[in-house]
Length: 311
Image (cartoon, rainbow, N blue to C red; front, side, top):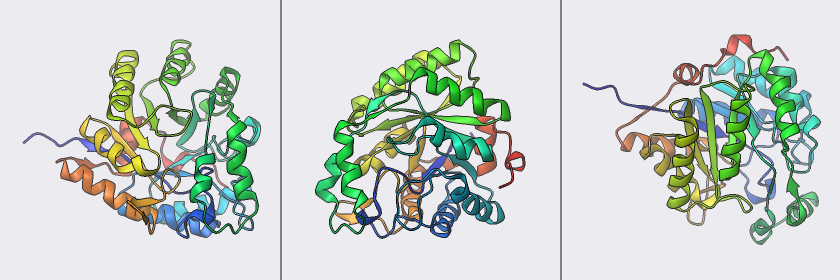
């Protein structure tokens, strides 16, 4: 009997996109974020993608000291692959965004592959009761925000993190970002296998129509051939439809409350683990299997959790 294909599920447990007033399930404190990550791993996520937040205000915060207790708890209780953000939030400097990955040297760090308009302001219509005064200001500011990821920024992150064995989740929000990745590959700044995360449905990036998903997959195939692992995420209501398309097309999937707060039309997800369970059902319903953390490490040529820096 032929071996069934393995699908890596990544769970992005919190982040800079959504604000805590939008959902009571969004983790904020270090203990909440750690519990959410561990719960997602127990539900089937091989990789947990982590941001941190100021526990008092709920704002995204890249202070390494806020990440330390999250990582310590995950190390004690899970073998999940840890993926630290270098995206942070669009208003942060590249120096601030890279600090946690520079200190902890994780197996994987995210890397946004191009500058873009990053329009979160439509979420103001869904904000509801605001508990923190920074939230509407932060969302409204994205009407005039360019999320900077210049070639110099990208090269700085690659040269800073790469020598310690950090591999990258290359986040590609549009076709040009794939070409940017091809450029740094041609220059020898990265090496295969590439882990490419195509992002659909963010205002300012590519849409989430099936034609958009197929276009990004075809472009990546043409540029990188067999030297990459492809994953996809859909923002908001597009999360599970994009996950289903990606799994059916030979790819991996990313879910989590960073990318969508929803479990269905008009229904807020109760947890990150709930979304992982739904993604797992989609994968297994297609006759596929979810990858374990160690299987993900093998597919992505990761250095192993034992080589992470201590807090």
